[in-house]
Picture 1 (tube, rainbow, N blue to C red):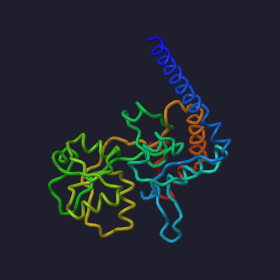
Picture 2 (cartoon, helix red, strand yellow):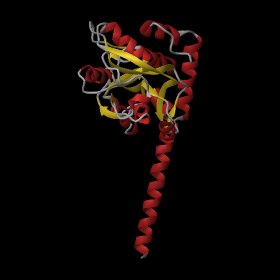
Picture 3 (cartoon, rainbow, N blue to C red):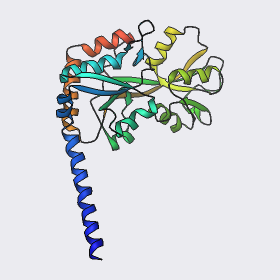
Picture 4 (cartoon, rainbow, N blue to C red):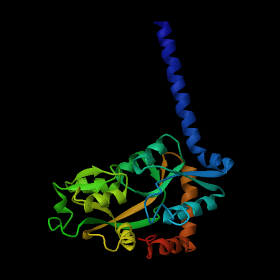
Length: 262
């Protein structure tokens, strides 16, 4: 019995030490990032106009890419992007594969319970997109009982399910809208900017917007809990980038409108 007690005490102490080390590591993340000289950023790379590859050069570009580069510059480090599917981005954050995700991550109450967010750098409205010959869906309420093609863990999937839609999982917006065109899904939900950008490249797409959300979706830099120094540094960087007009300029460059302000 004494041996079991001692073993139990050792395990408790070891667990406490691990938790303490993890907390210390989180608290010192900014110091570590500056020591290494790079900010590792999880990103999709397939989500125009936010994160995508230029067709001519194959260079990673987009609004979020340049926002991330500007944040890293303010921190005095280089950005290192690691591309992954949307559904793996936050899992990678949990596993410490990257320091943060900058990929239009919507700020939701559910996510705030587990993660910390910077101040928002994007404000958009959600839209319901259907085939142009679809007359059965004219509002968010009409999604009840219908199928909506979405990345499963996105805030758009959560919004659709809130209205009773059945989610068909996809790897991203391009696949989602193709399922709608192919009549394999009734609708897809995304932000108004993404759809407007899509129409620039596909002006003859047989799709249309039938509803616009009155709610504003805020997107921000997402971090694991307790990285307070890093979060404060990123907030300071975003405040400076907003004040000097950088965010507005980048938004106009990629989106032809300013989504950096509410």
